[in-house]
Length: 95
Image (spheres, rainbow, N blue to C red):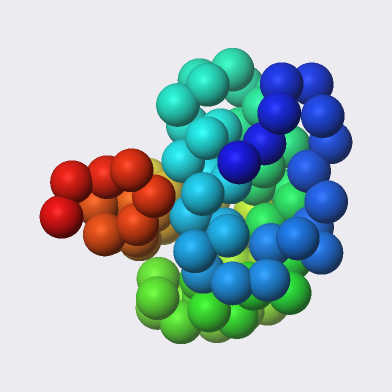
């Protein structure tokens, strides 16, 4: 979980669960700069290959899209599905 106004260390995002937690926190916060920082951190994360596999997008394509902040609605929805699946079975979510 990220703390308000604290930078996200991409190295800490070493699993799909860690990425899902980070993105869920950012989406919950709802501030554009927080979401952008989370997406940028995920683009550099060691766990990115797991997210790319779950989303069904080549790793380099996903990293470039996340880093640039320019991706389509389909990719956004796929990422949100992965986050939702991990949250519903993970931290504090209903099973």
